[in-house]
Image (cartoon, rainbow, N blue to C red; front, side, top):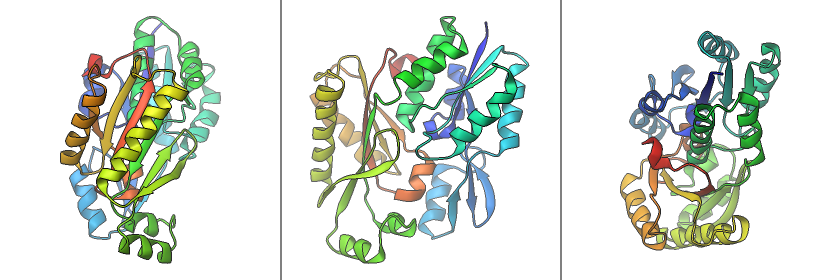
Length: 292
């Protein structure tokens, strides 16, 4: 049985990575000043952040229904089944919409309510691809990904409060005080949504908070204090230099792990702006480097 693995670009998988791994990619749409763009198709990350910093009106959008169905039907021309892994249903309604649409495909399209985004969603796509290559059918792949969906953790340090304020996640007064005090909030994604975790006054303090939080999750949630059987990753928004420093710091703590760096998807970048730094940990039976 031939099973196609389809994931949206919120996973951070680039068109080049998709082609190399045999995973199919659905680019996410954005509206900038009411004009439609697609991530990594006609909108590069540099262009996105330039327009964001120039205060253009940027809004996220779920994939267009017709485009999603067109991709499924194209894949079914050459495959028996499709496993579609959209971004977390806690962050977008696109997952529920896709599940509803899949009901018309008579068991040929399986939508995974995976509760993940960014590097953790990417890892789910890699797991799905490995399972498909091993001969698992779409229902087995979906069931595994949904069973393990909450076995992941993300912590994000936000460098500026401007975009949280702009998106209505902070009142102007709180944002003004936070900016004055140079507060760097640390947010977390634990499946359902983006939540506040802690706050720091410096980058160093924020990184330590995230390192401690990851260590606690590895020990208490994943029963892997040395991170054995887990994938640790760094993510960022236009902050490659600090991401590399942070990776080296984590590498010293977990020397047996290949720690990758990925940009955060633009759907998150819309709300937090440039300069963010994140760390993730996820138990997994695959290694990221196997797909690089």
